Amino acid sequence: MTELDGTWSDEAEFTALDNQADDAASEEEAELSQPVLAVVGRPNVGKSTLVNRILGRREAVVQDTPGVTRDRVAYDAQWAGRRFTVVDTGGWEPSATGLQAAVAAQAELAMNTADAVLVVVDASVGATATDEAVAKVLRRSKRPVLLAANKVDDERLLSDVASLWSLGLGEPYPVSALHGRSSGDLLDAIIKALPEAPREREAVAGPRRVALVGKPNVGKSSLLNKLTGEQRSVVDSVAGTTVDPVDSLVELDGQVWRFVDTAGLRKRVHTASGTEYYASLRTKAAIDSSEVVIVLLDASEPLSEQDLRVLTSVVESGRACVLALNKWDLVDEDRRHQLEKELDRGLVRVTWAERVNISALTGRSVRKLAPALRTALASWDQRVPTGQLNSWLSELIAATPPPVRGGKQPKVLFATQAGIRPPTLVLFTTGFLEAGYRRFIERKFRERFGFEGSPVRINVRVREKKPRPGKKGK
Image (cartoon, rainbow, N blue to C red):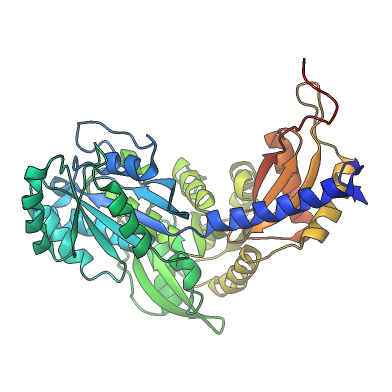
C-alpha cells in the first residue's frame, strides 16, 4: 500500500489518515452548508456588541460612534452543537437617501441573503420611526424574524420591552449585549428559527439563477432587453441608470433562466455613499443569491480598475462565471489584437472562465451564452472521486515535488474534494504549501479534470506531529 510520497510503514496509520480525510470532508461540507443569520438595526443600537456576545469572542469592531460597521461581515458561530454564520450589517442611514429607501435597502438585503433575520432595537429608546419602517418590510418576509430588545441592563427597563410588541415581529427578547443578560435565551430562539440547511441548498428546483454584473454603462440592461425581447430594463447612455436589481425569466436555447440585471459596481462599498452605497449592497446580494454570474466587459475600451474590482467580487463569492465581451461590433482588427494582450494580462485570476464575444445592441452571439452557462454550472457541481483524485495527485507530486520550506520539503499525504459550489479540495500535508505551488496544483487539476467556468478552492491542512514511541523530548 502506497501513499503519495512513499511507502506507508503502518497500514493502521493510512486508515487513520483516510478516516481523518472523511471527517474533514464532512466538516468542510458542514461549513459550506451553514445557515445564515443576518443582524440588522439602526446605528448604535449595539448590533456589533450583540454579535460578539453571540460568537462568544470579540470579533466585530465596537465603538460608541454610530455607523462604524459599513460592509457586511460574516463570522462562524456555534451554539448547542449547531454551527451557523452570523452576518453583521451596517446600520440604516435614513439621512442618506430618505428613510424608506435606506430601510428597504438593508431589509431586502437581509431577506435575500439570510435564512433568518435578527432585528436589534434599543430598549432604552423604544421603537423609532426607522424601526417601525423596517418592521413593515420584514413582516412580508418569508424568512423567520426575531426581535432583540438590547440594552436591558437592569429590571427597570423590562416594562419598556413590552411596548415593542407593537412592531408586529413577535415576542421581543430582552437582552444586554454588554453584560450578557438573557443572551442564552436569545441563542436558543435563534437555533430554533434557523433551518438545518441554508436556503440556497434547499432551492434545488426552478430556473438557474444568473446575475448580470459589470461596471456602469457596460450594457447589462441592453443585454437583458435583447434576451427578453422587450424593454424590461431602462437603458440610457448616462452611467448608473439601474439602481435596483431587475428580475426576469428568460428562455435561452430551450431552457428557462432567471436573470438579474444589477447596478454597476462603481466603487468599493465602503467608499460609496448615498444611493450608490445601497445599490452596491444590493448588487453584492444579487451575486450572493445567484448560481452563475455573467461579467460584462466593454471590448471597445481598455480593462479598467472597475472591471477588475467586479471580477474580484465575483471570484470571492465563489460563484460560477462567464465573461461576456460586449460591444464586439465596435472592435476592429487592431483593437482585437490589443484586447488579447489586455485580457491575458488583466484576467490572470479568471483564466478558467469561458469568454463569449457578443453585441447586446445587435444581438450578435448572445445565444452562445447558454452553452457557456451550462458548462460553468456543470463544473460548479462537479465532484472528483477521492481515489481518482489521489491517483492523479500522486503522479503530479512525483514529477514536481513541493518546494523546500525552512530546510524541509513538505509532503502531501492525502487529498479529498470536500465540497462543491464551488469545488473545494482539502490537501493533508506535513508542512505549509507555498501559494505558488497551490496555484500550480490548481492549474494541473483543471488540465486533468476540466472545471471550466468554476472557481476551485484549495485548502491545506497541516498534520500535527506526534511523538514516536520510545523517543522523549529532552
